[in-house]
Each structure stands twice: as C-alpha cells, then as structure tokens.
Length: 277
Image (cartoon, rainbow, N blue to C red):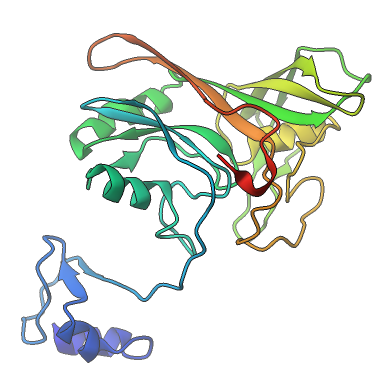
C-alpha cells in the first residue's frame, strides 16, 4: 500500500512521513502501514495540513437539542461544514467537539455568509429520515432580509425564474426561457428608516443564492451582500459587514413521532457589525 500511495501522491505530500505519523487511515480509522498489501476498491483517508484559521466571532446558539436532532442559530461567516479554507471554523467541527457528538451532520445548506437556523442530525441513523423532508419540500423556511425601501413594487410579490450557478463563477445567473426552477414569495414586513426596510422571504425552492438573486432582481439587493449587485473583493477573514439575511423560522412535521416542530432564530435584523452574537 505504501508503494502505491507513494506513486500516486509523492509529488504533493511526504508519503513516508504521513505513514510514519499514522496520518493515512482506512475507513475503519485504523492506520495504514507501508507494508500493507494493495487492496483494490478500498477507501484511504489522510489528515492534511491546515492553515491557521482566524476565529469567526459570534455565538452558535443551541435553539433545540434532543436524541435525534439539533437546531442551532449560527452567526454570519461561519461555514456549515468543513471545506476549503474553513475546517476548524465550521459549525460541524466546532459542535462535534463542544457537544460530544462525533456523528453530527447538517440536514440542509446554509451559506457561510448567511446567519440563522440550521438543522442537524445527532447521529447517522437519523440523517436519511430528516433529509428526505427537504427533498420532498416538506420543510417550511422563512428568512428575513434588510434591504432598500422601494415605492416601485406592490407586495407580496412572487418571483419565479430559472437560476443557474456555474462552476467557477461567483454569481448565479437567470436563464431566460428555461423552465422555472426557483420560486420565492417576498413581503414587506416593516420599515426601518427612510432608506431601508425588513422583508419576509419564503423560498418555495432551494437554488444556490436564490433569495439573494431574487431580491437583486427586484432592485432591492440585500444589504451587505458581497456578490450582488457586484462582486466585492472582501477577505474571507473580514467579518466587519455581515450579509443582512437571516434564516429566521423553520417548521415541519417530525418524520419519527409526527409532532409539529417550529423553531425561531434568537437573532434580529439588523445584524450587528463585526458579526457579534
């Protein structure tokens, strides 16, 4: 196994050193030995070197916890899962350690720059049951956003179009004359001042950047958005100006016991500068 790993990976990492330090492991978690015979169709994992990550400010509030699920209210700038440059600074890695839940896993997506409610399964055995609710569209999600006031629209308004997010591109785009794959209902909830208002957003689908694109398309882009209407050069470690988009409500019928579940964010708009709790 050591010779095969060396042939494949020695250009990128010190294979012999990784084996000596037991940084290569099988799916079972047992370390790979350089003398192990080659095993086809076998998963081998390794622990890579990570950059030193800047701590993301803001508390992860535990809204609800039971045997099967965990509902948390995450701050802006904190990734849901470990990926790319954000590993230790992710909801999953932080809470697996803090709560002693090694199998904790998210059941839906929430962008790194979006704040609010996130539903997670405490163990692998519960994940499929709860994920299927999202796949069947049985989970009601409500967001709230701070954006410019407008006198040009009559609310509520339903936005329906086809959105596509191409690999390698920062922004999503509307594809004209394509079948509808994104739908949102947007309402004016309250006026904050002469320039801004809070809007209630109810997505009926879950496309990437859907709510941000729909608000932008209406001429009222969400405050603090680093991508819409234009891509701004903002460092991933710059936490000064959070996106004013909050996943504020989550409700569903529990697939295990049939109970009606409803959860609400402890955060309110506007989200404070520096992404404080």
